[in-house]
Length: 51
Image 1 (tube, helix red, strand yellow):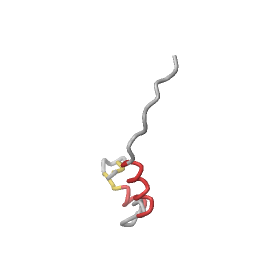
Image 2 (spheres, rainbow, N blue to C red):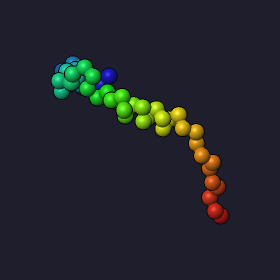
Image 3 (cartoon, rainbow, N blue to C red):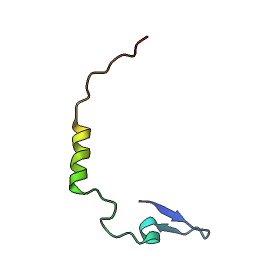
């Protein structure tokens, strides 16, 4: 949801300016599953830095 303002104070959507079609820029199912798996992964133990 990005709008580009021109010199006449008129806003146009990014999709309108560049002709994006519905669904462009959406993640494919495989990539979405990979990202979900990364987010759902429990963090490993954190090591304290050596002093």
